[in-house]
Length: 400
Image 1 (cartoon, rainbow, N blue to C red):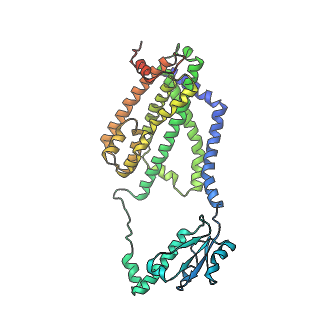
Image 2 (image 1 turned 135 degrees about the vertical axis):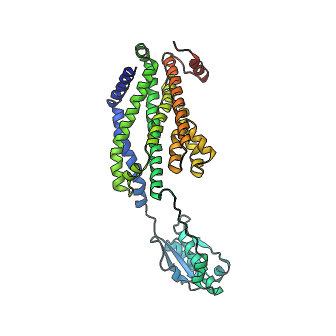
Image 3 (image 1 turned 60 degrees about the horizontal axis):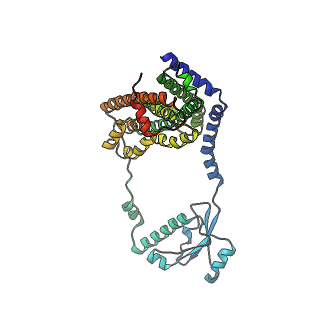
């Protein structure tokens, strides 16, 4: 039985490796990732804010607070001419705006900043400097010692320290868990989509009639899943060979240390079973579709199943030992994501690992068998898409 499975897997691998679209995607995807990763940084560097100058009408001898701006793009000029002409001078000299420092501002703490352009930069800087002026003069008026005020109003500085692990090890676990989630989602979605369209194409071209006459449906489906899984691993390995050196060079983060200090057994176990479970769903769904349009409409529904784990990320982060987190890490459709995340955040009990693993294995076996039955019947039926009622009827058929 395994011989036939590996024949199908090898055929799927070689067929796709000779496919120009697969090779183009293999090379184009890292280029697009690099583009989207580097382009925002370049745009942010190129998109320097335009210099903004403001007039300051100083009636309380406080312009020295604005003489040296904390931002090179925002500056202040003291206005000493007639106030009746200030609006014209702002527009003529293309300044960003102006404001008036007077006794009323010190009493009320309120001030109007007149802008020449609503999109002008510097609002936060102006607010910070005006607050410094207001605090300084009010301290002077109340005769409060500045050093005493700073000492009394200083906020508490809290350093959190873990009893059983250092902060670096905790950070490494989180980074590895997040990287795992990204990789498993890619494997499921990329390979799952390929599996669905592969099953659809074989059904449409009526190749299944010939193939299923010499090999069992379960062996055929297992071969297709294994083949596309290996294709996904080839893609990931190629991209990691390019990406890890780039991360080491451009990012100040100990990549290898994070990998070696993290427990990679848990992610690997849940990645393999999670991939088998979700891939079986994609294959079974592809066998029920008659055309590409139907597959495209149904693909969104199938994609929502592996994404169910994302709904529980918030509760897991806020309360990793809570009931919701425990249930989500045991439920087979969410455990491939949630259990790995929980294991990185908190100490998960051994019984939870055992129960979660057993349920995931059982669910994978059941879904693979059910998808194999749907695959066997659906591949031999033509002319229509199977609805939910018909799929349930297929599952009730007894194997001959």
